[in-house]
Image (tube, rainbow, N blue to C red; front, side, top):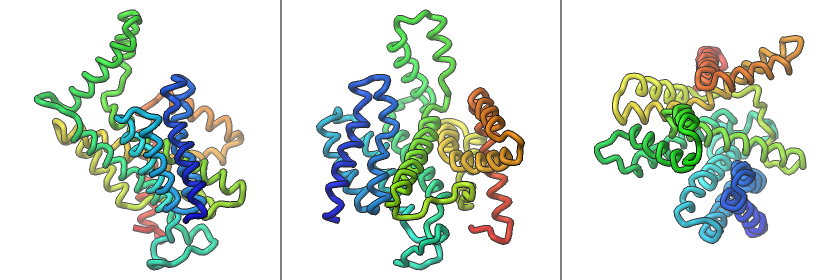
Length: 314
């Protein structure tokens, strides 16, 4: 561990500086901040979860220097916790090898990428719980508090904008903003983890083989959690229904990834797969929530089919 500590320290410092970039370079900094978890993931996937934890601890200390103190727990939750979780899971042996067994060279001996993604989406429920506990609602509902906070923030930011333009922006804001944040958080961590693994594999220093993403599979419990949250969002009222609907957004992202695997497999059967995929992603952007829901539905169907097959894993 002492050999890798300098790398962990550098990764933690780099991560915080990237996270703090939005304070100093408003537009470009916001983009840099999206990759602030990448250094922690690189050092963790290279040297192990203990190095990721050391990097996260260094990042927390550096955050006390470079960030307002109120932002320190935000940095820990957005970067430190998911980096340690992903590295700890990704470098485990596959289920069934036994406790303490060392993975072999084959990718099948390592913890499945789909299971890592499922646990990451489940961890997003912890963020939602912290949000629910930390919002002072009084007599207002959670949805009303969120809508009021968004209205006040946008009204302040767009104070100089025409009334019509301000109204259009407010109308375009999603009602389930916490759920959109959870989905973005899961997606951000996933993409950074894939990039970290690709960088390490390119230099031939990765601790595990790069997963075959086209063979992505999810555990049944993840689908069950998503369907339960979806049912709660539809059937429950008040704060419980609002929280369940928001939870469904975060839990949907692994299923969206599963559905996208099917879309890419189908596109490869066409004469011009690149054109087809470009058109598909364009429709996804235009279709927004409806398109994502359709792709997540494909993912649910695919997982259910795999579970019914002879090779299905519970």
